[in-house]
Amino acid sequence: GAATNTINRFQNKTYFYGVSGLKNYGILNDPSLYDAITPKTVDGETTWANKDSVAIFNDVAILVKQIVAQNNGNVDVSSRFTLAMSPTTEAVLSSTINTYGVNALAELQSRYKGLRVVSAPEYSTDAGELIQLIADDIMGQDTGSCAFSEKLRNHAVVIGSSNYKQKKSAGTWGAIIKQPSAIAQMLGV
Image 1 (cartoon, rainbow, N blue to C red):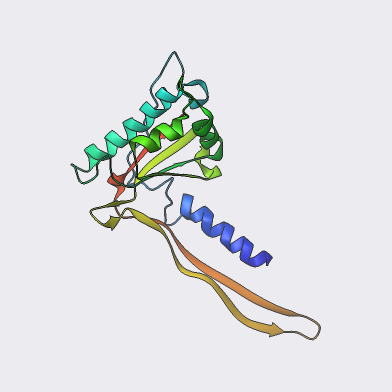
Image 2 (cartoon, one colour; image 1 turned 90 degrees about the vertical axis):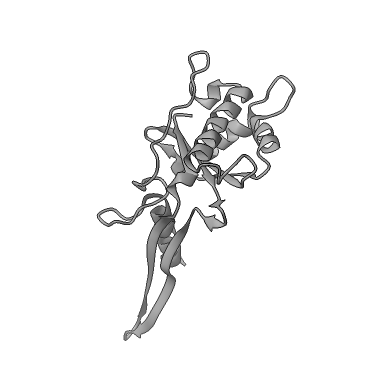
């Protein structure tokens, strides 16, 4: 019900931002992540909404090159990648078409066979649209995961004279990033 929905929303928020006041971080604010880079300027524009599919492809290629360099060859262009962005950015990615009628997403997936795209509203930030390219693993070890101590615990029902109540609880560790070198970020797309 409502309590379960509230707990799930809180856990999801911790996977992105961690828990304030604790050494509990999310995928967007982990201090071990490399700083976000700025997209290339093309005809005075940095945002994808104002770029063609080639410029968008080139921005993602910069992130691939960064991850390859950060991992000394243990990641290459044939590795499995997750490209995370907001739904707004994803819409631009899949609708920006080149002169041959191919959208930027199709171009990327043609070049990087192991690329998948995921979206979440949290990637629309006050500082601009953020994308993260994540190598899913390095030499078989996962880059990271969303972790929790308990997903949901239903405590005993307490019966009153004309009511009852039940406490529900959960525990979260936020996003556990084991290999920060496997993540590259770009802000302002």
